[in-house]
Image 1 (cartoon, helix red, strand yellow):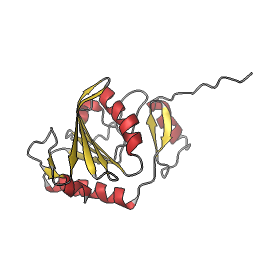
Image 2 (image 1 turned 60 degrees about the vertical axis):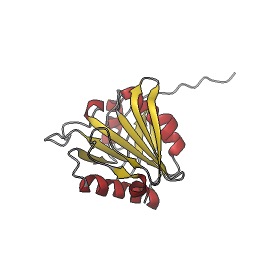
Image 3 (image 1 turned 135 degrees about the horizontal axis):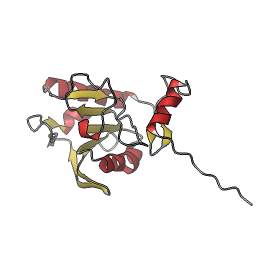
Image 4 (image 1 turned 180 degrees about the vertical axis):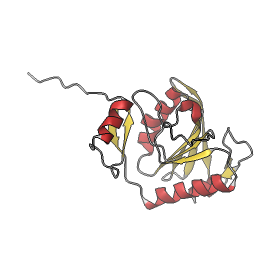
Amino acid sequence: MAALLTRRRFTVDEYHQMAQAGIFSEDDRVELIKGEVVEMTPIGSSHAACVARLIALFTRAGSKGILWVQNPVHLSEHSEPEPDFALLQPRPDFYASGHPRPRDILLIIEVADASASYDRDVKIPIYAQAGIVEVWLIDLAKTCVEVYREPTSQGYERVQIVRRGERLTPQAFPQLEVTADEILG
């Protein structure tokens, strides 16, 4: 007779306790997704260059938000992902008192070369359930930007594919217009 295996879901607090206890090192690339500790894919040079372009684009455009790069966001009791890029509501303490929560997040951007299907099928639905108003998935393999807006508990109501030669604007900053080419390089 086969034994039934059950999974143990962790809370964000337990996840932080594991890090404090030294179970994870500072070099471990992990995040908490739906209560499971998930190892993140390594960052390749195309991925890193795209994140650098995003930082430059949003900095040059004079974004009034806080640029939050590859840092945790606290979405729920069981999910604390580390998106590649987030644009946050300005706050004097720069979130030193706690990781940003959904109400603080103006835009999340995931950059994907090998992880596009995981980001699309796992992370983006979590962002929608948390009420993140806008998410961009930069699919480097397909050379496009997927823009997700109007979150519901079932996913995003509006999805737009932006290709080279086309422009996009974050909802929170309508004066900030960028092209897919500037993002994709």
